[in-house]
Amino acid sequence: MIRHFDDILRIAKERGPKTIAVAVAQDLEVLIAVNEAKKMGIADSILVGDQEKIEEIAKNNGIDIKEFAVVDVKDITQASKKAVELVSIGRAQIVMKGLVDTSVVLKAVLDPAVGLRTGNTLSHTAVFHVPGYDRLILVTDAAMNIAPNLEVKKQIIENAVKVAHALDNEEPKVAIVCAKEKVDPKMPATIDAQQLEEMNKAGDITGCIVGGPFALDNAISEEAAAHKGIIHPVAGKADILLVPTIEAGNVLYKSMVFFSRASNAGLIVGAKAPIVLTSRADSEIAKLNSIALAVLMAAKND
Image (cartoon, rainbow, N blue to C red; front, side, top):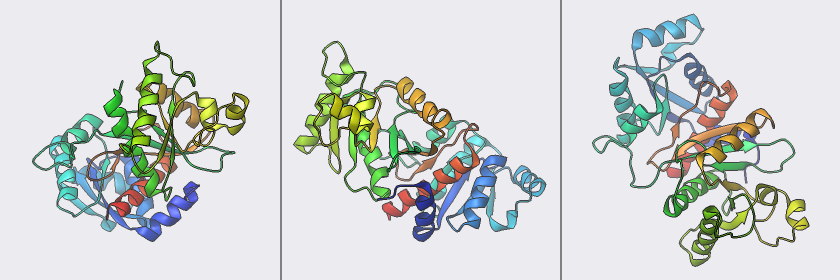
């Protein structure tokens, strides 16, 4: 089981390189990340966008653009579609967002003509290495699904489990995180948690162990779980944290990054190929980590 981002980068090099199709690639931070991935032997890239702007940014920042194939498409919608098409026809295995709104890229991903839709829910899975923990912690969904219902939560779990499997965690422990660890009819998230655990036991959710409801403390701390007398295979040992809403996920995500100084990566999963959508607030290493994670996902899809 992969436990640290140093290992993700090393193993991505062993299982790669894969090819990234960058949608609207005239973005300095993205060019820096894909250039570093190229240097490390993790991934090659096809840069789709305004070639003149891409070449200008590369020249001004010491990036050798000759290392990359460039597809000149100036319109951002068409550039996004072209990047997705490159994955759809097998010339690339990963989509990465450049200087374009997420909604434009996702619309291209879901386009029935050239897209990568599977019929499943798309969701965001973040991966963290928190100082003091002996394992990677996955958080979902902090960026895509606002208030998922039971069926959507099931698919979000399934997406996150695929990420865990790509990290060589063959039976990840999934904690359904709520405000308390007991089922309460006044708190719908706790009822969903109970039903998701039952789905797992019935074989409707596979490849993992699901437990819930858990409060955050007894999901990740064995000491806290023992203090409350909670006996469950997931208690205190969670690998995946399923949050009830996007607000809870967003707050948890940013708390881990800014308070805990956790190393992180993130992907959109649920399509035929992994999608790297980093934000400008993400560090350069977070972008590189996300590319490496996408390479592991793409290798698992082979």
